[in-house]
Image (cartoon, rainbow, N blue to C red; front, side, top):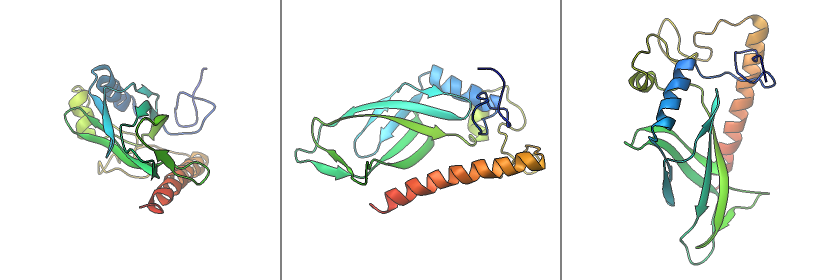
Length: 188
């Protein structure tokens, strides 16, 4: 695959906004050093999980075999946290486990294989600079060049056409997040 998409992403066949090269370097260093941990709150954790990452997302395959409860119980979501082994939370979300409108039934011995996909909009600049000491200035495409604040378009200069495309991408991302949040909220 060669070329790039409208926003510089490495996949020319998909429309998304990639992380900056500095953010990708910081993520690469975390993965290569084995510093990541996934916590499935209430169920357990994975030290140094396998992490596959691209220029806009992280994918973490997880294979769990439950040691409890004895009697099957309905589980409508997992509360997932990606953090460093030193306890710095990088991302946390409740991810729905329902299929065809039914919750996952869990009991001792139940096995589940899943892949947690995390779309990355921006990483904390202080964390990025601590991982990539030579990083200077803005570390994310979404940091405003004047204020340093995380904004909708950050420091990207977009034509009117790219702005419309960018807005459509963000609306789609927001819909996916909203749909997952609603599915989880219905069960809490």
